[in-house]
Length: 466
Ligand code: CTP
Image (tube, rainbow, N blue to C red; front, side):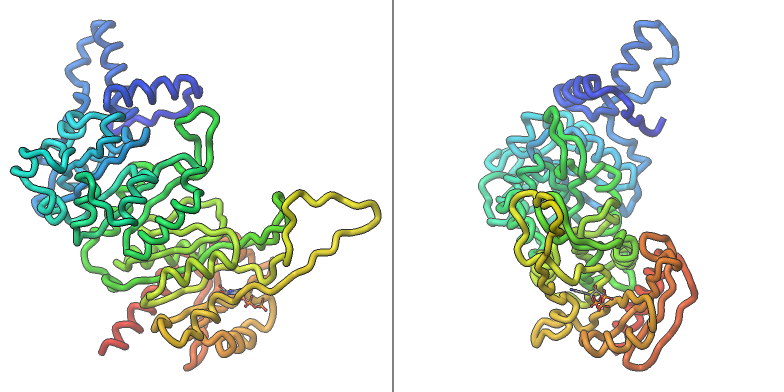
């Protein structure tokens, strides 16, 4: 049995299981294995010898000779129990895993459990003579191919953003020249706090990759929202993208905008459009698969983040512009977001009530044009700026006009009339409009459009280099 999925338990049982697993320093899956093993013991079954022993490192034979070294920094949060499962999953993919536990992490899991799974002692203390003698924090920082911080707590992210070095994890993160992937996990209010978002923006600007957090139930009773750590398989997918060998876009930084924007009218209503974010996400995923370092600035969508992509989530057009400007410089910027053209000039702080016989008048102001702002930058303009043109009639004529007006290099024009089913659908018909002409692509899936576009971009960058 490869893994056990713990779903469809009632909340009370799930909480009990989570607490029991955390107390024993095991993943929930391992805890279930141990419980089942105990039950089988009581039943006196001879099937016991076939049980996979809990908390054993993966057999050496499962590791590949050219395995990558991953330094897993485990922060102090209830999600730390998932990091034990993460060790196993990374090893299953052939990685060598070394662990550092922060002092707070040791309230949730033990160094013994992490060390037993990793097959090497877990490191905990900056001033521990033995570990400094064994490897030293500078070697820990440099020997890994990738550093993964999971769970990355608000405190750990603040330390990273501020350049602190007062414990082993922080010192290693400051001393490293290796790529860093963080998997944030915290209470939704802590995640939404201005200081956390400021630190996140700083980390992204510093080149740190981010996976999650996801929306869902928190460990605290009755709490839910954005703040759950990404699942171990999502973290592994992000690791694989970062460690993937050479691709045509390796070493390139690509910025993508995607999804709609929501412009508030009052606390419960907003102006938006029908964009699902599918096309932008597919482009971000295809760019990451081609080896690029991808930053996706996404408006609110109901879809999981694409693997191996750092996602900055925003609500409004103005927030999207701010996130895009912070993310520059980039080699390529692709604007696939369906930005709301207008916002309400004075959103109400309270819910607007109906007034008998008098329809509400909303004052609108135009939103900044994010694509045009970036494409017209005097300095720091990405060498290749690509926009979309969502049209319902005179598709090519309008797209050509948009290319000139927005100042971008390429426009991918598509007909978004309701009968085409493009908005929210899975396929797209694209006309690539550039200064040298128009090329019409056959109808294809949004994933295929993304791959074709990334192929085009790779060819254009290669040509520009020659
Ligand atoms: N765009 C943008 N910021 C805006 C509006 C649009 O970055 N405020 C970008 C979109 O991401 C897309 C391109 O501009 O790449 C064209 O978007 P589209 O909605 O087709 O055109 P608009 O500029 O909104 O013009 P119109 O609504 O008049 O067609």
